[in-house]
Image (cartoon, rainbow, N blue to C red; front, side, top):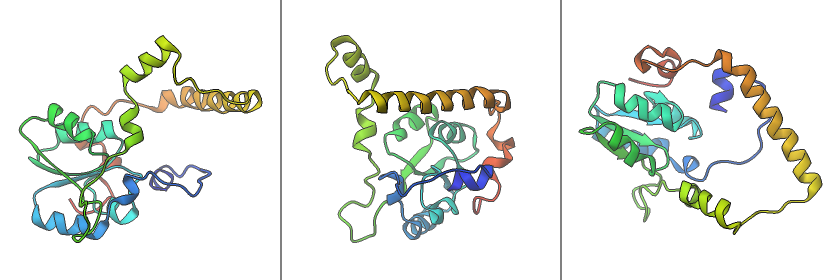
Length: 184
């Protein structure tokens, strides 16, 4: 719904959520922010509204990595899959990245922001499927045709929007990323 609010796009949303982003807790994030008052908070837009509201930057994982590189801060609290932290550390050496909390103080896992399904998506796994044909997925022909129609519509839409997309050379100047998303 964050993307819908920001773009004003008419979107058909269903009752579903990302198991990682949905687990971030606003009250726990606020407590962690108090422990690290100079930290900038980087949040994926699929997180709950009370987490997004506390963000200094809301964006895709690539936008969050760019923000970590470009912002004049040494400490960041990150609310997205923890698999991205390694990429952030590589992109911004010398900066500290803290996982946003996904559960309360009495929970056995205070920060388990890990998606097992995303972890399966690796180039080596894709190459293996292409080379060996193992794990091939078969779908009903009618479903396949309808799926191709949807994919083509998405690709056509993306091609139409391409003219409106420009690279973010300087995130500090990208007001859409920084306005109205919480305290700085």
